[in-house]
Image 1 (cartoon, rainbow, N blue to C red):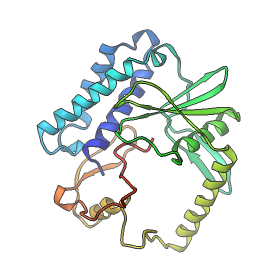
Image 2 (cartoon, rainbow, N blue to C red; image 1 turned 135 degrees about the horizontal axis):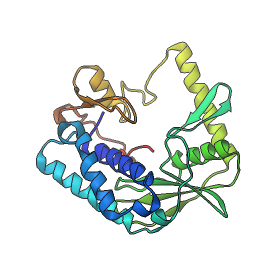
Image 3 (cartoon, rainbow, N blue to C red; image 1 turned 90 degrees about the horizontal axis):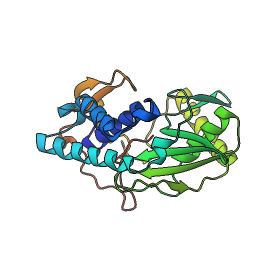
Length: 253
């Protein structure tokens, strides 16, 4: 499922991944914006869920501004990231394998530092599990307990903001409990939405696609190899979200 905000997040992350592969001396503003122009075709038009040329132009402008803002932080131009596979995997025991796509990992005198680039307008909550999970993945992969983590909110700031990580053992225990729940659900074929209804914000759009309301607009051949669907605006759920919750407008990695 794609919409303009998620399409923008995808393309900005992909552009930065390509940019980091360049030799340090070639990481220039002009080169970064050149990659933007080339990469945008992957999400142009209905492939990115855009309903008009005006909407697409506005989102491309926003993406350009994010990349311009990124270039204002010289740290990423002067520092060499740690080389790691696109989706590193580690075993947690009990038939559980942890993997994920990490935006940036560097190593300094303090240990390993994980940085996640955010393209959404909403800041992550203090109890977000994304960076704790990434930190555990890096800790297991490099066999070190010394990992810290930060966010970089490209839509409003070029600075890196530290995130207070819980103990790695707590994150691992949480994942094992989640893994056991998923295993039991698969074994018993009891896939029910825990909201108590037919679906919730996390799966209602996917349910609409399964019901035949979505339109297949492409397949991502590079990173995720997934079918890409869009929903007509009239098919989006009109049910209100919980007052304390705002749906994410960014990729979960």
